[in-house]
Length: 252
Length: 318
Ligand SMILES: [Fe+2]
Ligand SMILES: [Fe+2]
Ligand SMILES: [Fe+2]
Picture 1: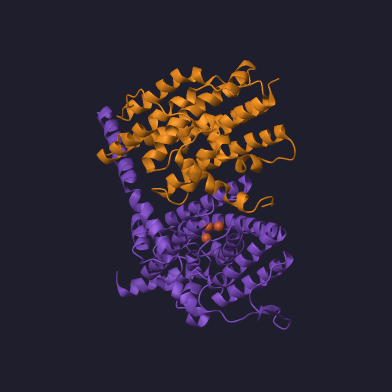
Picture 2: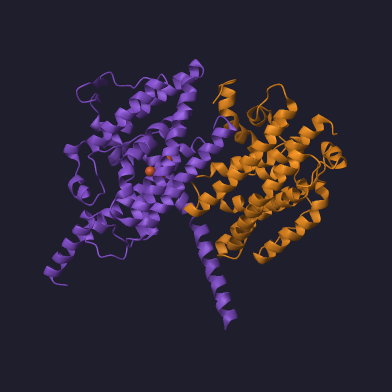
């Protein structure tokens, strides 16, 4: 059995990514480049928020004291959210939306493929259900990486610009935090560091096919896993938490 | 074709409609029928996608995860409705691009109700309950309209709209049974959305231009005033049930008519909004045009990529 605080921390490190990315995608609903893409992005948001709910319901159960999924989702301080910086990057244009999605989807699928064998039955079940959804997300974002990369000169430059911006945020995906260590030892969690090789290979394959390149950099951005977020995160949380903060302790 | 032959076709066509036969895209149809249908179906499609905006407003701020997911799914349904309706419209020989052009240039209309702002969470409840509710009353008769693709689209749409209506009512009920602040929020939303919802059922019969022809083609089966009365009679008891007050001091049950009498509608406000001067006409159009223009490079990329892939395939085949 794993220390409960650490287990909760470990779940945050996975679930908060789904929450924040789901929140970002949901903001785009109604503003997509065409109806079909709009519907597809909303589908991904729905999947991610659905996963978030399953994780948070589990956390609420672990915390006890009549906590609900909404307490977990809405009533933490910014420093208590443990999503990676990658998913909180702004939707500057559709290239950023797709780049962010793609760079996260590849990781997300690798993670869930391992997490489905977790000794924690609840996490294993959530992961198993998520695999189907995330495989679709990965296909969608990979297809768009290729369309934008090998589309027009304009789209090529735009998606390359987005990849250049986002790539330095990917390294954090593989950081192993103190809570993760115990989760790994108990065979509840996944050792993210072991996913890196497959990740780089899978990303490179699509990027190359899309006639794009991964930027060469030695400098990476990290902090989300410690709860040290970018400036954009505060605005994101202001929207997310607005109702719960303004009208505390009410049922909706 | 001679005039006589056309007249003949016209007669056969009207007889088919009178016999309740469906008209399909490949069938001959009078030009006026085609134009009227393009106008009505596209106006309906535009309403679906412009309607995504006021509600989309609240997705990021929804008060609970359950509500967020439900709202997101609802707004996505509206996108789906837009998609079916644009497709139905395309069967009449007009492209989606042309239809968007008409919307973006202000030539085509959409439902005026979406030119009102959603300023509190309760507005999301009020829209589902009242706006989707009024939409259903407008649309259920269209499930048996004469043009096949439109009728079939409406059957799917109506099923989802009634789900939206129940969901909206449930949001209102939760608020009405909540804290005093929540109840006040619900009442305020009802106050603001009631009259625009009544106007949504269209101008009063005396001023409605299209009704006679539309009745014949089953694009309309009841007059605007009849639909409005039906909406009021259906909605008033629902408001009572959850303890909210309809903002109409003249509202009164009429035992003789077995219907509610209601106060005068401010048609000046209606025409002001229809003519483009409502509180949100400008920002709604800016949002639509903005999304379309910002998406252009994306659509271009997809097209160019598809062409390249096609060329590769043909080369391989050779
Ligand atoms: Fe509708
Ligand atoms: Fe709809
Ligand atoms: Fe609806």
